[in-house]
Length: 304
Ligand code: GYE
Image 1 (cartoon, rainbow, N blue to C red):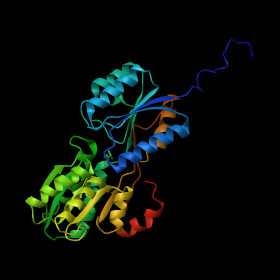
Image 2: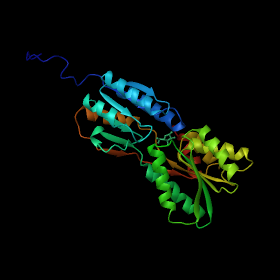
Image 3: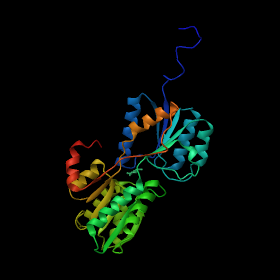
Image 4: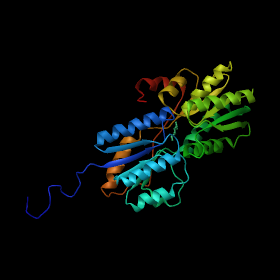
């Protein structure tokens, strides 16, 4: 020691980072893969992770965030189940001097100083990609579409609907004859699709905001004696393994990818933020789309 009075600690740079992560729930294959990615990446980065599952309820997420504030974690990361209603709790985190990183889903707060950055997909773009495929597939043929929406009020449900509608609005042959939430779950997708099939004998296409609801719809279509992928075509978003398998089997016709593997980037951003570095306010995930052949090719090496 130089005798200057400094401690061996060297300014606190070596202390373990503690992150509080408030997850949406365990509603889909996507979410399971996302949770695993975050847990694995935290371990890899030597970050201590406090993790909570809100079971798709905003009040539970708010409680979790408040408890992270109380525990004085170094950083809070979360995926907001819905877009609105976060200002109060985010202000509490800000007042406590704890940086907040949004992952996967956005909030619609006007005060963007309430969070450092938002890491996740461009959901409007995903909706557009689904719409582009529909236009290519059906051309000018009259097409009756039913839509299985994600969780009401969530960023991916709002944006995937918007992007899809934007593309189709230019072609009068496309009609969305029914649109309802299936809450991003397989069971939700199945139940809503059962009702749609009873009400509408003439469905040409299902647009499901995620694979799980599309997989539920497949069950309902088969139970109604129709052939999914043929009698009724299906386009979904996510590209998790079960969805990709259904695409490879010809039961789903097209999938727009949404990557759940946000963990490594989240840990990297966390380290930068806590080191006082500037980070971009919006970090968009890179994604592709899959046809049946592409799914068959990608499946053997798919991580999730
Ligand atoms: O598409 C869906 C999940 O927020 C992008 O949430 C995520 C969505 C994903 O339940 O499967």
